[in-house]
Structure formats: structure tokens, C-alpha cells
Length: 103
View 1 (cartoon, helix red, strand yellow):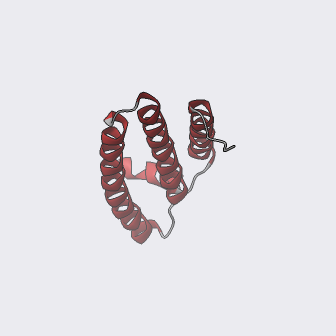
View 2 (cartoon, helix red, strand yellow):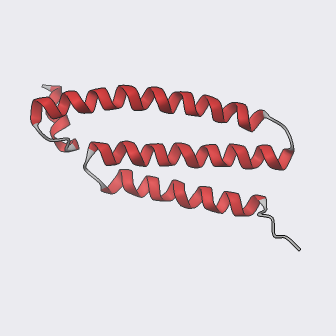
């Protein structure tokens, strides 16, 4: 007798990780932590796509998951470049100091 996770198990896990990411984005002030939390939220969305794809027995969720991974890779590359530039200028990656760039 083997145990197999159901769709509800995957969705509960995805909701939990997405919630951790949202709380991290709202609470933290460090830009690197913000990017890690955004990546956590994107990965929980990928888990949801894959779970529904498995539930419906088609490949649509896998295709959407690849698009989300491509967007996440581009976001990480551009975001880390911006963070490095901010760190070189301010010697900190605090999000509150980024607001000073508006002037």
C-alpha cells in the first residue's frame, strides 16, 4: 500500500510557500531578501501549474511553468545587476535608500 499526494496536498504546499514569500516581501527591507521571496512566490506558482497539469493529465502546466522560469531568470539577472549598482553607490542594499534615487 503506497501513499500518493493528491491535488489538495500540492495546493496547500504552494499556498504555504506563496504566503511565506508574501510575508517576506512585506516585512523585509533588504533587497536580496526581497528577490529571494519573489523567487519563492514564482516557484509556488510553478508548483501550482505542475499540480494542475498532473491533475488534468496534460502538458499545459509544464509549458506555463517554463515561461515562468524564463521570466524569473530574466528578473533575477536584471534585479541583481540593479542591486549591485545600488550597493556600489550606497554601500547598502536597504530598500529605503532606493527611494532616494527618485531625485
